[in-house]
Length: 179
Image (cartoon, rainbow, N blue to C red; front, side, top):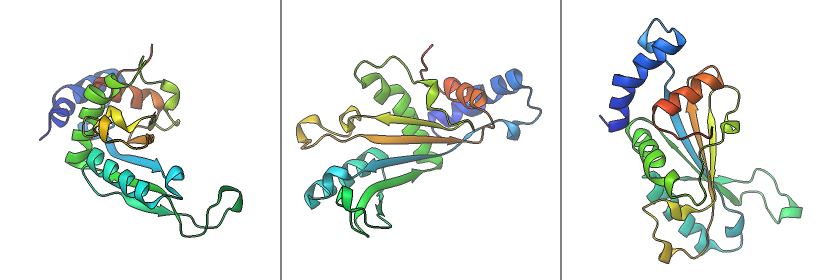
């Protein structure tokens, strides 16, 4: 069991039950999955850059990402049907908890001018989306090896019904929010 799973079971569940009045441990919201997305716009013309992006995401997530292809051609953007326009990976269970622990305690403090996660990133159903502008804030990526900086989007999907419950869950798990 990971450190974050243990924290969830021993501290978060009792605190959430007390604050929101849940009667059962299973009614307490939990993190279901984490989805990491990377747009491959700069790599449309350079296949070598796409391979680098795949390697970076593989190092960050700990698993191989899937390629997302364009469903139809858009001439204004220079996209043809079937071109790779993004990379996606979904983390669950142990890998998810390890990634969330690393995100809250190592990655976010390394982001330049970071003052906390904006609560506006919630979608109304307790799920949070965070954008990271540089992949170099992750400890697995060495800054001197980076040819081109790219960002990524992290979606944390919870079983919470409201943003208030989702925010409290993530706050108790150690995520820093803006005041």
